[in-house]
Image (cartoon, rainbow, N blue to C red):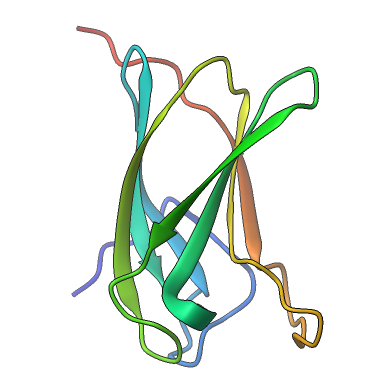
Amino acid sequence: MMPEPVFSTSALGPDGRPLIEVWHCERTEARLLLSGSASVYEANVVIRLERADGTTRSFHVRVSAGGPDRGGWSITVPAGDAEYIVVGQEEMEEAVRKGDRRIRFATPPPNEP
């Protein structure tokens, strides 16, 4: 049984679950730890960190299975001064868009020691 996501896309995967789910998002002093599941083309999820000045930094994480199957993913990235996290998939020009295929949420505060 998969955990309930804390964040998810409105677009659904072939299994009826959100296309991309974030199960865990934790910030330590200098890093963001993210994990979840996805059913995405070529088994690739993009994590983009957005700063207040509009600059971004992107990271790619491999999902354990490519669409139409669902697989797990997990990544640790430098937190820096990111204000928002965007989790999504790389869009193909010919992709049919039904619902939002990205999740955008505020960066959590650092955990207390």
